[in-house]
Length: 280
Image (tube, rainbow, N blue to C red):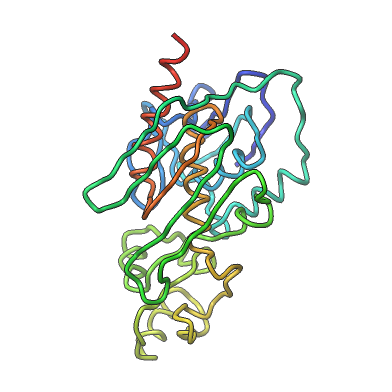
């Protein structure tokens, strides 16, 4: 995958080079088809999955125009955060294209609650901010909170935060080919209850890891947390990635409670509809 500069008003687009020169899909919520374990876009035969971390990095760096060339469906997960993308953007540099940005300022409150009790609320505001509350009824995670506003350093405080998974989900995900290459290095693994070492050894063999143990804090010991509330910060990162699919930066206060890709993109569709109506 390569991320290339693009002209003014190009927006963010993906090109599936393995399909052909015209296999282009715009990074817009219009094309969201599934949100299981990530956000997927689909337009005709062109399909792009797990793009939310890359999109969050583009949004965090206020990159409006880019062409992303990729030779497969899945955007690389890398370490499970936006940090590797952020580092490449810093190294490459960002150019001001000399044109005013198109920005949508929300005029009316938008609120959505689903059957699982997840809620996302957008309030009109003069700036972009996110308040995120995480609650999985987990004694390891507890209730976590994260915030992003104009005073937050995206590079140091949000981009490095990795995705997470519960221990009991690991083997089914592996069996359904949703953990590519048997790699545990791209996710925090939460272990709610003590697990027999024989089970940890069996899983270690499955993922080709020398040894696995449950740390006292309730996480697998294959990596260390970067923040005490890293999981909430990652959910905030997901919100930034999903709402970038509105197609333009937005001025609004987003409040998320137990949010996920499904509810994020449902609300993002409402915001995009409001934006398109404002152009009429």
